[in-house]
Length: 78
Image 1 (cartoon, rainbow, N blue to C red):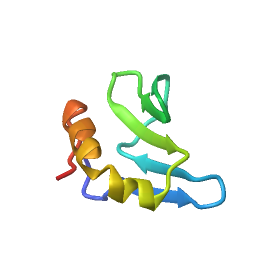
Image 2 (cartoon, rainbow, N blue to C red):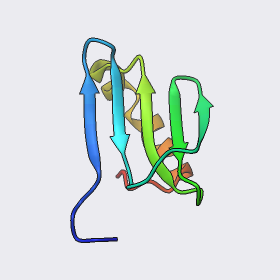
Image 3 (cartoon, rainbow, N blue to C red):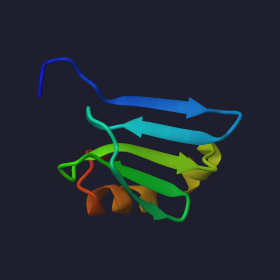
Image 4 (cartoon, rainbow, N blue to C red):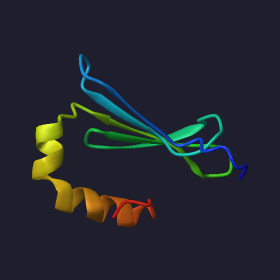
C-alpha cells in the first residue's frame, strides 16, 4: 500500500447512509446483511462498507455490536 491514506468516512445526513471506504479498488461483489452492504474487489478484499438507515444515536446505543461486527470482518475498530 502506498503512503497516501485512502481510507475515508462519509455520512449523508439526508439519506442516513454512512460510507466507509476501506481500500482502493473497484467493487465487483457485495454481501448484504440487514442494513449493511460490504463491497469487495476482484481479489476478495473489502473496498467499501455502506451502512443504511444510520444515525449517530443508534451508533452510540449499539457500539458493542459494532465492535463485534468489525472483529468478524477483521476491521481496525477498537
